[in-house]
Image 1: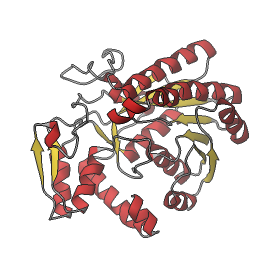
Image 2 (image 1 turned 180 degrees about the vertical axis):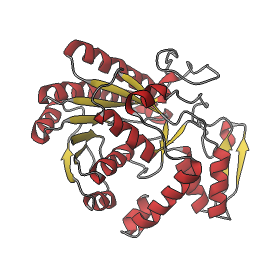
Image 3 (image 1 turned 30 degrees about the horizontal axis):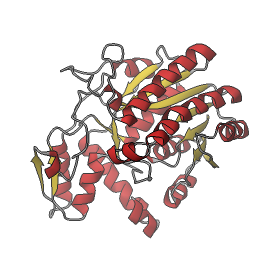
Image 4 (image 1 turned 90 degrees about the vertical axis):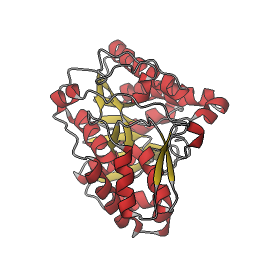
Amino acid sequence: MNVLITGGAGFIGLNLAERLLARGDTVTLLDLAPPPSPALEWLRALPGALHVAHADVRDATALVNAMLRHQPDCVIHGAAMTAGPERERTQAAAIADVNLHGTLNVLAAAGRAGVGRVVQLSSGSVYGAGAHTQTELVEDRDVPQPESLYAITKYAAERAALRHRALHGLDVVVARLGVVFGRWEYDTGVRDTLSPPLLLARLARAGQAARLRAGLPDDWLYARDAADALVALADARHLRHALYQVGTGRRWSPRAWCDLLRDAYPEFDYAVVSQAEEANVGGQSPSARPPFSVERLAQDTGFSARFDDVRAFFDWMSWRVQLHALSSEARQMF
């Protein structure tokens, strides 16, 4: 398969590229920023064919040109500005331009280029105040009530994609992701909310104590599982729905993650605090929401998450050792 990934230099884009290239596919990483050098070195050692395209999703002409040049069978649209409160205050228009207008540009370009399917990445943050259920969040039952500007624009992009599908017949499927963490996560400059597992790991490696805010989001999803699920949606011959939730279907334990870190880094310690201003992890995070129902995804693609906390932890640590052997840049970035 020939796949073009927008936001390809970012965290999830690199995981997708690794998954696709490992099985011999052709991948184009489209991004405004170049992929990190250590990632390119790692990815180019895999069996598939890797290309890099420089383009901004806000530039409709550049998107059309890139898709006509690379002729992808599928586009996975991951480009986004994952904004925190400070960026919301100062760059509100840019957030909307990238997350909503950029999505409209990607969909239009995909139609112009004859792309077979677009898999559009969304976020569980869209549920916001609507995540009231005590069981699990279900696609056709629980109504999103997004609160942050990031979540509002992601939900608007979801609805715009589904409307585009209805109007133009483009095969668009929306993948609503839980809290993804793991391989290739780094500070891209447009991602203000790094995952709790990464923040905790950084503190542990520095020998610093973590103060976790009580009630952190805990619907975590290891990056390799996220990539597997998204590739399954890209591969599926027939999908019965236009929206799928991507997660493990269960809660994770931040305390258990901290215990794994303490075993690996004995100087690390942690405490759970009740006040956001006391926390150095999760102080500005939203409250925990129930886990996703993933029954729809499992039924239509056969996907089942492979990684629990222990397996994810040791896979991530082993990967870091291998990656860090490549260069000092890899050690500094990842």
